[in-house]
Image 1 (cartoon, rainbow, N blue to C red):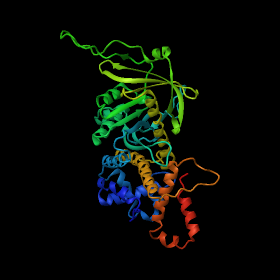
Image 2: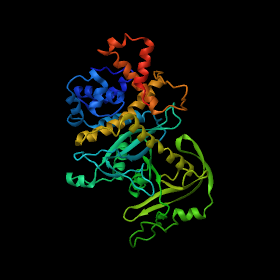
Image 3: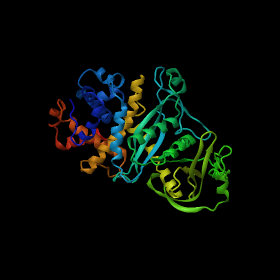
Image 4: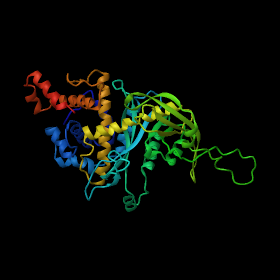
Length: 447
């Protein structure tokens, strides 16, 4: 059986609590295959990558995903604790929530549906894809080797179509409901922590804002805002006991009307890609009202890019103590989760699995997203102990380390351990040293 490298053993062994010993041994082999594989992350593709290390019948490894008794929630809890440990105790943890739609066609595929593809759609043309919609909650970590924070997936949930929920007798949950559920789990696991949740326009809902406002001691929400939103003042103090108390105060001018008359102030904020940008800001405070849902106190911000490369935007925040420039700087860090989705597709084959049963569908995608986090954590520990080897070509110099470099270093670590096992050990050690190192470089290269 494959022996975990010493540099990775403390981290990988922490996930053993969710499995029995035989299942954990097979899960480690599948994880090794997912890291070393260069193409599809199907079970057979991962077994082909590890070769003779996959001892036993091939069907035993298929049953790890579709038959064996284990849950992804204990794995997610261990992984989330490992990520949160990298954030200083007094600093709020910045989280990003978004959804991604890997295509997966087939008559018997569980949970598939017709979803809007925001990446390929434009304002005039909408692209629809058949597949799954995963709502992902990622925690931002600032590594010492990176200029911008990396979004490490910690929790995810599958959005099921309404027809499937009715068929299974389950209450239908929208992506916003799933995001609220994932955030509630995070608050339950870390009651002493404070979180800042950043969401795109798809999560700029009154329901999610109301949830974060009720749990304002634990979480703050920052998202896009409607320039014509219904903004009201706080309800007046009740002076008599007669009649029903008012649920809201006088109606205030919407943000778009305020911006047209207000004087804009210039600020320097953090921008996409870890850069800074000079912008003009207008802000205001109020209560967001929705009939039957109550009031949500918030601060809204209008942003105008002075350079003109980005369109004007409106944001809101449920924490009235944050300055307008801080709100914009925190929102722009949300783009790291989009980079994570791209890296997971390009280097970990997030679109390539061909599972169709319910258990395998609900396990494979979370494991691949979690593998991205595991690779980043392994690379961070390797750089901390000077075990990582980053090789660059003289004709292509990178300004900073990317995930492909992290995956290459982790692959090299595992390939070195693979070459210690028979029958590969006998032949590899007979090769010249320079040729052996060159072979490791080509096998470990991610991109």
